[in-house]
Image (cartoon, rainbow over all chains, first blue to last red; front, side):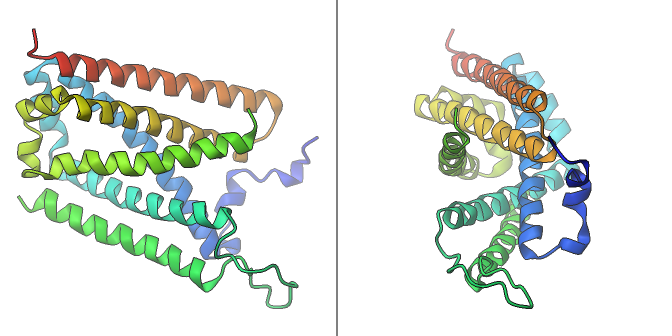
Length: 143
Length: 115
């Protein structure tokens, strides 16, 4: 049986008092995942206008190829870059690589699993997303 | 299916999607972006059989990865036998629906102008 006090739901995820780098990465991975799924569904619907012919396709481009549409695409590029890079990190760490050896929990209780290498990987994922967004902006707004 | 097998599928589809989406993006960048979106160019892309196979694989891998990711989030959010079954079957149905809808576009677009 599920204890009611153990069921914090979204409030538990959002609780800022428990935020560390791993928590931020956990949240960003889920947030970007849901965002990318929403974009994927919208993209499949958007490209389906191809089946209606040239006029329908061009009408869809008029709707999406706007500064607002480009801004959404830039956010999607950033989400993809972070989700992919952080996903590769998760793939490696869940395989047991780079997380160090288990140790006695001594004060100030720094998680040994969040090693400097793992921390660096999270920051690299964020940096990669920023670089990808800048490149995307150059391509989309540079024409 | 065991949850560990589902996680393996999640990782395999992630790596496959990474490579396939990379190819998809490169097709948009081999010429100026706006030009690559012109109807004739997009249809020509779809009529290229290897590329249309890549598109179909993207559709399948991203749908499986995306909807399984959503299922994981929803099951973390709330537990219970009915909830888990409902979430699982809704995600499977949604993935099948989006794959079918996208496949329809790929088939029609790859045959456009062929008649």
